[in-house]
Length: 171
Ligand SMILES: [Ca+2]
Ligand SMILES: [Ca+2]
Ligand SMILES: [Ca+2]
Image 1 (cartoon, helix red, strand yellow):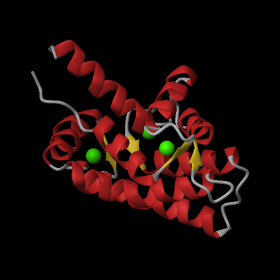
Image 2 (cartoon, helix red, strand yellow; image 1 turned 60 degrees about the horizontal axis):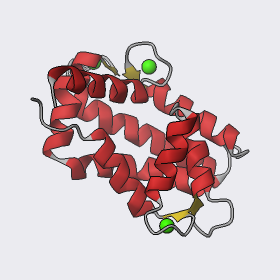
Image 3 (cartoon, helix red, strand yellow; image 1 turned 135 degrees about the horizontal axis):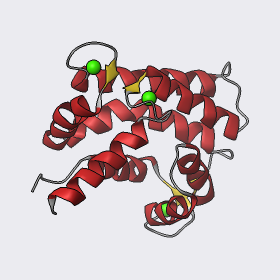
Image 4 (cartoon, helix red, strand yellow; image 1 turned 90 degrees about the horizontal axis):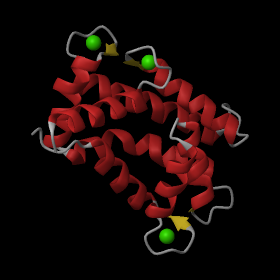
């Protein structure tokens, strides 16, 4: 991978977290994503699933801040993301899965409307709400369903999520 490609990947991962595009990853990016996901799946914030999603989003933010907010100003700059998050997540991908797990589990609960597992269609909706381009979202959700039964398991989602955000070696 050359430098330009590496920079592009970092930029796209930062943009994925910086949901409101204000140039920083902060608590509002996570709580805003939770709110939009609840609206998409017609779920009230007050119910158990809604509360689990908000607390998962908060835990995800706290985990991100813990590894990347070096100056403690409650937001993660692009520089902090590159030097802090990317390096630490690459050194310890498992740690990333741990901080993301409560949020992802809560998203799955919200998106799984029949309790039979999340459908590829529901995952596509989740990804679209999170800002993934529609064509890519469809492609990614199909790729996640490795056995082709139309449902996606939690461990498949966690593995793919970690793989996506853990950046390859710097050239
Ligand atoms: Ca932001
Ligand atoms: Ca900071
Ligand atoms: Ca499957």
